[in-house]
Each structure stands twice: as C-alpha cells, then as structure tokens.
Image 1 (tube, one colour):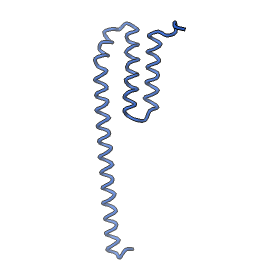
Image 2: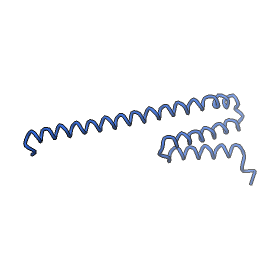
Image 3: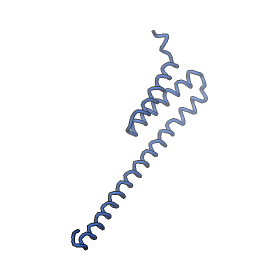
Image 4: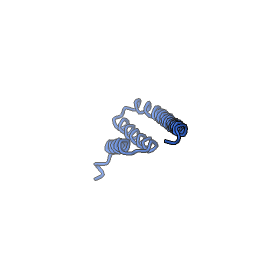
Length: 108
C-alpha cells in the first residue's frame, strides 16, 4: 500500500484536485486557492523529476503569479460594480424621462 504513495503520485493528485477545483468552483477567491494547490502539485512534480533549477524558478515566480491573479480579480470586481452602478442610474434616468413625458401628456 505504501509503495503506491510516493512524491509523483501526490503531485499528480494535487494537480488533479486543483484543476477540478478551478473548473467547478464559482467564487474567485476559491479559484485562487485551487490554483495554489495546482501550483503546489506542479512544483512537486518538477522536484520529483529532479529539475531543481526549474523548481527554484517556479518557487520564485508562483507567488508573483498569484499576486497578479488577485490584482486582476480586484480589477474585474471594480469594473463589474461600476457597470452595475452605471446601469442602475441609467435606468433611473430613463424612468424619470418617461414619467415626465407621461405627466406632460396628462398621465396617459
């Protein structure tokens, strides 16, 4: 039983769990956590195949990619909120213009 559990198997399991989580989860922060799990599996796979120079570069660049991903999520959230606010004021302006036209025509 313990022969099956080695570094390569654990890394493959982490990559599969992370990939499935990224696809299935809806919340952006949950996706960030799953991407981190996927990256941990990728890092273990690189180490298990003894590409230590690539593993070093991966260990340095992974936190930077997560930071960029979080900044993109924050920007997307701001854009969505601003569009919702713009559309809500747009609808209010349209309704008020329609009400003014109806009132000027005697309410018909």
